[in-house]
Image 1 (tube, one colour):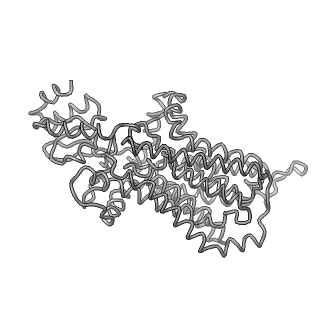
Image 2 (image 1 turned 120 degrees about the horizontal axis):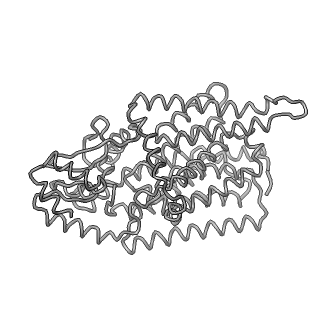
Image 3 (image 1 turned 180 degrees about the vertical axis):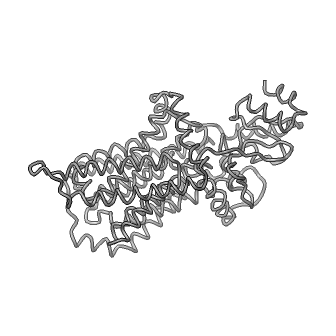
Length: 489
């Protein structure tokens, strides 16, 4: 593998390839959407109902800091504090809900229609994020090297058709939709700055930092860490040992890029803090709580591997490509190093936490889109021997084939591809219907999805825990407490 300088002729080709690029992008987005359409009516499972509640119906439902749907008693819906940056939930409650109202795929009270209406806004947010992420990549395509161009395209196709990204994009949750959008907007803004000059570049880099702060706190922290490491490497690589002095000309690009983005992160964090100091601090408290659990890294990795392995594979490939010319990249393309490092930092952070949530590793979705962006950019000026290029193309095609086989299998067997992956959906729906038929006024203990489908039935979220659920019923429906306790023994 070697570095191939980009010629003026190739740059001109990239500049004039707007129409072919637009057509290719439209085809990819259409294909990505088509792969997901068969799963939009999948039954909501687990915690999906708590976020679906933010997009179904006509009016916003968030009350102060309460955004997570956890029960209904006496016909009154109750929400609790999300323990995260509230801007994400505000966005889903307003923009996500509005998107859902604009796409009338169905309008009835059936379980299938309710599922479709719950998932569609999250899918559309994901598709918008994908377009935003890939628009700046036109200038990073290896138009003069067909083999590398094919690898770039297949990387995009491989990741976006992976069960992780398909499931994450239709899951009523934050990471696979809003999270991907935060990462996409930030990365696209940072990359686009390279096409500008003067103060406009600094403004765009700073805006990229602000965008990274509009999601979970750990995402912004991961980017900040990647920027600091990139800057440190660039400074070390620019130090002239013979003269014992720093070559500022070489170090300046990295300092300008990383400093501007860090300033944007600081501003973004301030905005999040101003929206709600309580929510801002709760995000850090939640990270400490998970760390205090001392969950097994090996067990968490083993559980997430079947779905998250594409992220790990691309992260290794990206690190290898960077390691071969890290010093030069940190000085000449610090923004690409930072974006790729950001993805790896997010991935490493979640691996270290050992957290598996509901069994679906949606937490890797923002890192996945960042890795695609980073790899496409890193590959632009790389030349591979023909045999290596052919091997990588075959490997990626095999990966796409495996993705297709997995999704087809899940569709044919009627299994969940998002929360509680592999759960038979027909059996879960039958359980919901049986609980609804047996309802006699005593609150049902179930996941939040149950409350989305049956609007006239009182229920308590199973993930509240037994004691918290009992106290919840005691506070709001004490007259049925004894019967409720008896029903959950």
